[in-house]
Length: 382
Image (cartoon, helix red, strand yellow):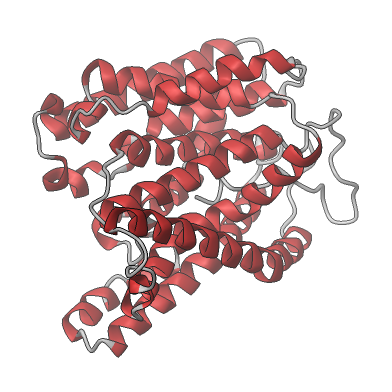
């Protein structure tokens, strides 16, 4: 999700200098690590599940929800003081589209090409009806779970809808005498909407999640994550927080493992009741706890590269996996490894290849496009 994978950077108006920032506040490298870890978690969840090796439902669900919170935090941190006019908002949407669309469209082209090669005419016709909404990233306005043409794309459609609604969130995030009260209202209202919607769709955990997944994948099911992230971003933008001490890594990691602990419950049970409400709060707390963790040296370098490649890993690992499977490469090694070990080895290879392709795409396509776009679409200086 593009906001979740953004670099927090923002330029002033054309000809103006970059925004003056507090030391090391331009990019939060621990959040890059969190982002990369969650992207790897989603890939592991899919690759093990598709091979019937393991079900890690807590990771599969809540790693994506961390992305929503990261998205709210990153775009609020970067834009809360800059989106003030309609022109600013248009530039903001253009920048977010450029960040989101290139890789999504590239994966979409591959998916469509595969359908043509496979001569699956029924699927091609069905996909063509949703093509325009996917190319414009507006499929989140409808039913993204069923209209997304890319595996995992539903979350991007919902995220783009949050971008379109960002001015509404800004009404609660502007600094001022009543800013704390407004943020509390935002969090409380968003949490109430999300809990009510999720409980209604999933029948308080009694529904079979796959049967309700399209009804579930609506922005109302994730609004508390994004809103909580927005509050974290505004909190960080205030500049009043210093970097946490090194020992803060211990509670931050404990929160991380508590969030993704899989108790063996069904997906519906993980999303409703005390499990759902508690993990929703924990999702935002994880992002807040990781936001000021100290990093240095090789850890910072690895974090930056993981952050840059996370979006690509999220979208590319299904493509790489099914390409490897379709071309027969998935069978390599079966003569030397037991079935279970072979499946785990294949997952590692797919993740490694996906990370490599993601890094290359970011360096040669996304980064140049973003650089030119930031020069073209400028927002007001904070």
